[in-house]
Length: 382
Image (tube, rainbow, N blue to C red; front, side, top):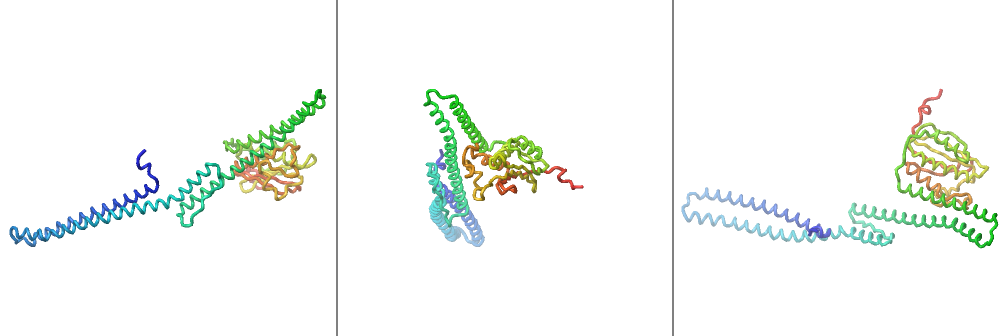
């Protein structure tokens, strides 16, 4: 490792400023000295021409006495330049060191904060200095924003792990409890065995759905490459509605194509239809429709259930969030379906939201960019 690489920012900046000052003085010194030498030669020639009539030693003595003050002045200028240059170099080194110390102070505080964050404490933040340069204020703001995002990400991760553990613990505890009750019987009846078997299988299906949803979320967070292809949307949605057990009623279906990952968007539609069916109940009605607006496709799923309160609409897409009316697990929901749907839609560059449905219940709408209507849609009517 070289000596320069071992120096800190303050020492490097001080030496750099000192080197610049030293070079500048050297250039000026050489230029002034060259000019004085030239002037001395000119004066020498002029005096030689003026005293050409003088003879011998008297002429030489007079010329030497007249030229010696020029040499003395030149020597004096050289000494002055050396003295001033030395003072300027020392001042430049000291000023450069102080300037570098002031410049490096926010960076040192940033390094100290980063060390605290590395130790697990995400609460420290850098206080912006009013007199700091704009670049340092921008860097401080960006650093604090990064810490805010890290803090939020870790908080969400802790909450997610806690929620996932709770969701998994509940069915496993139910299975364990039923098996322990059955195990205490010396000769369990076939009815009890079948009852425990049915309950255990139902709980295991919930665990499997939850694990599948967690794996789906993990894959979506990795932002793996989607397989996009052009889809004729009306046929695509009609096939999904016909294959769905909820028997969704089809409304208006925009005719046109859009590039999307068919498997991922199909999962979104199935999730929304399943949620709508649970909200509407067995006797309720569920609708599926799609309209185009400004080059974007709006897919809408309606139900005639109790709806979603306005205060809850911003939270229904959070992981493991359930409305109070569907807080129980008997419906089979894991609380991840809408969260997965939001991740898929946003990965496609779209958005998803909830509003009141004309049917009286909830309407979940997601929109996707890049819709191209068919020529039949664009052609004027007869």
